[in-house]
Amino acid sequence: MTETLSFQDPLTGARGWLSYDIGDARLAAGGCRMAPGLSAADLDALARRMTLKQQVLGLNVGGAKCGLDHDPRAADAEQVLNRFICFLAKELRTRFSMGCDMGTDWNQLQRLAAGHGVPSVKYAIKNAQGLTDDEFFARMSLLKNQVGLLTLSRRRAGHILAHAAIGAARAVGRTGPLTVALQGFGTLGRAAAHAFLDEGVRLVAVADEHGAIASSKGLDLARLLQSEPGTPVPPLAPALALPSRESLFDVDADVLVLAAGSDAIDAERVARLRCPAVAVGANYGLSDTVEQALHRHDVLVVPDFIGGIGGSASMEVLFGPEQTPTAEQVLSRSAHLIRQLVDELLHSARARGLAPREVAMELAARTKVDPEAPAYGHCPYLTLSDIRA
Image 1 (cartoon, one colour):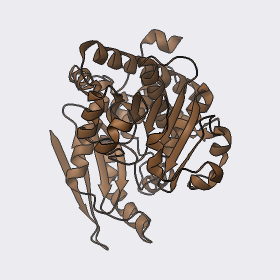
Image 2 (cartoon, rainbow, N blue to C red; image 1 turned 30 degrees about the horizontal axis):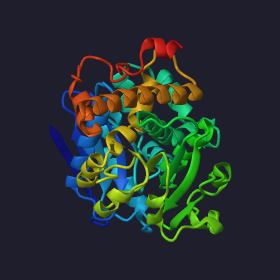
Image 3 (tube, rainbow, N blue to C red; image 1 turned 180 degrees about the vertical axis):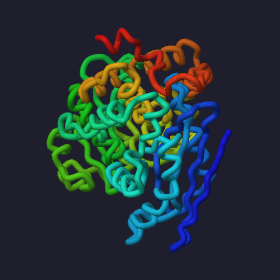
């Protein structure tokens, strides 16, 4: 059941929407996007994708997505976003747990929400989980903690994508040290790269909108991560630059990680891809046609609503346990959760000759929302014994 709330900015005429795909859940979660040409239909589809992420994890949470049809680089972008946040204020207090998405920033959203009397863009979790203000803010404060080079807030989604990719490489029989090619070096890609560094995975290629660099011996990942966010990739290692950003897809690696934009691979390139596994972190990172073609070519694909499940999974790890975890525990338990999920998904798909997406849809369908139960604490891949360990 989709419910859409509409907004029109009184000064610029910019349109915005909040789309709920909530069903019987008391809480819905999803990001805030700002992009020219964004439509209500786009947000409806993204809200449905968010519902799948919650359902795969067995959560009592529905999907949602909000956004503005406006250029985030425009001079008045923050003013328009501020008025949109004012429009959303009641929803943010009661049933909408919001995160950042394309064109928005977590700290910016938090600051603007506070200006309208909303203590946090995720404040709706407090009531849905039955927490006091002190309990809620103690857990939320962990997102500001530095873990390595990044805060937990910036690490969590990419960390989970990276461990989904590692699980995919193991599922296709790759043993020993792994190699990865990474498309995207923004917030999601950098966070995934941080996890690869921690796990000893060799990054052999990385690309962004400006181009790509590669080395079969492995790139200096620690040095790349020290660069200023937003720095174009090719100047980070000019001697290793590839002819184009699409040249990334011609590199040999155990797994290809898609962490930026939609429709990353075209149909003509499928037969030439030199990676036996693909982990998709960006929404609609592959078209349905290309994903099906990869399956026919025996390339194992972790679909976008699994690889991109990090925001939802980290909230389960943060708010599900009775005791407040540490920031390090949020990352370690998130890695455990996604590896359990990916192992079940991919081994079942291989055993039954199905595409992983088909099995993932089955996993999502088994979740039945209990509107009387707390939002978090129900994930079958994160048992009480896992938390105690």
